[in-house]
Length: 79
Length: 509
Image (cartoon, rainbow over all chains, first blue to last red):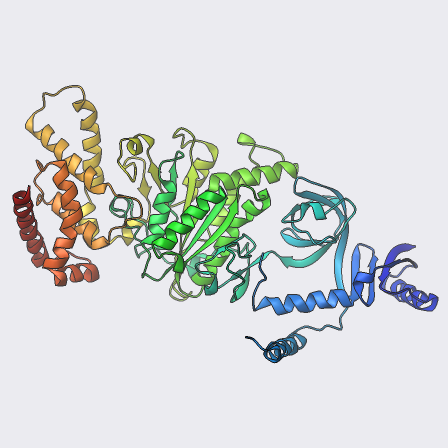
């Protein structure tokens, strides 16, 4: 049994959680138990912390990615 | 006024480009870990499965750090900022990237932190690329021998220990012997020569850096200079990465075929910062408590200075590292290390500095292992015997202190030595063009300036003769600058000018 944490901006329905657990079990090849944690700063989407990895599919993470790409060729903000 | 519409349009076009380049629908998978201990700028992290050495780590609270240690169960991370924002138990995520700094010509004339953030309050700047701070040194085949001079404008260096583009020449000496002054003069003298300069301040007082920036600004040297600044109040990590960051910024220009000059001021403080980091990471201390890899710390940095072959673009990076000694002890750990890495050293002598021979370049202990090949031919001709003659003078000077009874030859050698020493003295921030140096040395070594000339007149000669030549024979001076050989006609012209100047100047007295 592998334990993990699923972070969301809004509470998951029991079906959604079961779906996530099933999919993670499929990926990891072992049964998975996820505990829920609410984190408003994610804005939307989910972020799963399991087996030493973070699977980030949240809006916050995507925005961070976009901002990094925009900053690549352009300007750096003031210190 | 910028219109909102314009901003929106620019942003939209950039976002479209981002959308093309990165797949935003992909789930971002990062290795993650939990901070076990944190303090003194070092965090020990559990997990972080497949992180690599040097990887940038992000923490929950917004702090970030670099992986320095990979142990069985934990990863040692040195923090770059926000030590307080990395509490015990906070989540750490690997980014899969190494630390990179912005590079580009918009950074010239600016003061930046080792992370590339502006520190001079002049706002943000655009940059051309992000370069990782650690990168391999140019390979053997992409290098060529050092063959072009990098003139410092200081006669005592350009004549005796010449520096070539792509060379690494150490400036070493006790505190307060004019080490930084030499480096600054070298930067000032690059004006109009197409050399991009980088000054890396490591663990210095903020006031010293401010003074230096002002000095460069007044001399008009800031336009082609970037200052990478980590002061004594910055974390050891910042001081540790500063020279690598500066080097990356210089490499950006070097690989474009440009000539660059980088000054690391100073590497003793850099070694001390690295020692602090290493001890906090619990690496075993070695000699003088420095870790075992302190040699590699400096060798991998200085190996990145190079003179690139024409196939590789023909750029160059000249490095002038500075090392501070304690009571003139050049056989301490860090000085011997850096001496053995570099292509020569300029040793500054405390006694000479105190007896007002400045720059206090010691002729005996200073050496340039590759610069000779890069020296101008005319300079090599007039300065060839200078080192030997100065050494003879110093030797005799010691004996002459005991007796006033000397034979004529000895007296002549002493007078001649005094003239040479006087010629080599130079004020701060007053670099001399190569042609002026050659003219003066020619006059002194070829006997145009009689050995019994009083020192005050030698001083006057030093200040006036080059300008006198410029006015009398501008064509000849131009030819000397371009062809770098002393033609017979120019030699005659100098002899005549010297004679006239001496007669004329004598009349005034």
